[in-house]
Image 1 (cartoon, helix red, strand yellow):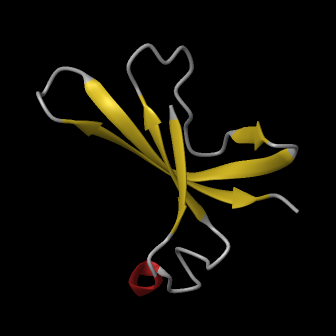
Image 2: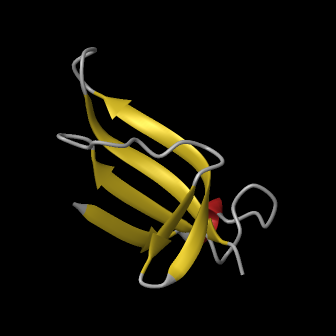
Length: 74
């Protein structure tokens, strides 16, 4: 499951996070390939660079969700 969202304006500094960046939450359960910084992913015919990836691990054993910062390559 993917949940793309725009960043809340309070986090947009136009240096680390641009207004055009997307924050995408991805369920890590059963995920065959884990996106990492530097990867390029495609969605809806648009290519995105993975700028940051933050695995959320609540039990100390298994990543439950991966929060990825993505930026278009165009």
